[in-house]
Amino acid sequence: MSRRARVVEILKSVLIVLLMAAMLLLFLLTWSTDPDSLPEGVGRVVSAVNGFFGGGFDAAPAVEGSRADTYGEASPPNAVAVMRGGSLEAFFAFNGTLGEAYSRVQLTLADCLGSADGAANVSRGEFLLAAHEPGAVFVSYSGLQPLSLIALSHGVEAYGVGEETVDRLLLAPGGENVILYAAGGGQYMRMATAVAGSRLGQLFDGINGADAAYSSDLGFSGTGLSVYPGEELRAPVITVQPSAMSESAVTGLMSAFGMNTESNYRYVSSDGTQYAVENGVMLAVGADGSIAYSAGADGGIGLRPDASDAGVIEFCRAILEGGSTGIVGDAEWALCGFERTEERAEVRFGYTVNGLPLYIGEYESAAEFVIEDGRLTGAHIALLRCLSGEESALMMPPAPAAVVGLNEPAYFTGGGYGEVVPQWSE
Image (cartoon, rainbow, N blue to C red):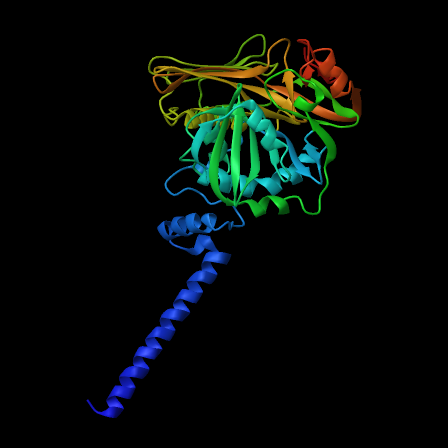
């Protein structure tokens, strides 16, 4: 080979190397700015590596091959708190500060849940110590729910957490990476994550919460952990009325239960209850918002939830959301009970208003679903319209409430309708 030919070959090799370097640079730029443009398989690998090095995307990554990005909050958060500057600051639903704070936490929480591993039981004392660490972030929810379901509602799948039910999460600094704690029903867990601990210190830049204290520091004797304002405790007064069942409301319920809204098999009884019957399924919609669904042995074909606990709960939550949109006012649905055997599952939801539970008479649940042999066979729902007014009620401060043995603030209807003032539960 002549000298000129060798030079040409060397130049070709250099050009190839430069092109490969340019491709690698473009790949890295795509990784850091637009991970959604990567192929799905590559995107998942990149997401894992990025999480390992403490990075984070602008939106929680959806799980390949799952419906993680379609799950909603089965139980909404009611408070977020952070240890900052030697004191606890909290953000609450009842004073309108929760939304911004929770939006700051969601991405980091999703990354922690998605990378959580090595769940181990710990004592309540260890949980409380971690909650008081500088930079620790505490999130409380309105009801117990599977930890895996919280992850799915944030668009990730938590492979290392199991089906434990929790209503409290804690992101605590733990050396280089965040330690994720979870609590519920008197049980406490600790999990390692791949999220850099430095991310906690940046979550609440530019916003300030109310001075607050943990329930354990105020003298509450229960095993759960809550946060309360350090000064006065005020919550809006609400009005509770039966929901008006318009024609659009009825068709919305039929759609939510998978029924044909153009069905001719509909009639109205003398008391105003509207009935729809289709293929062995009956839906009864009372004029006062009382809903009953029943499916016979051959009915309810198609209303079969995913077999997992999270899938069953999300299935029922989606029916509630689809059937009550625009009807329940300022109320939100929150999971308040879940029982399951091999053949049967019972799922119960209640209302929360301004982050506080609403009791209808003595009952917290307002919707109950029964699933047998993998199929929805029955449901009962009480649709109420709850509206927050401009007036707020000054409640007993938390410390005295703890002394006299009270539990938590809530709304109690007493079984009737009208104006409802928040009270402490006994």
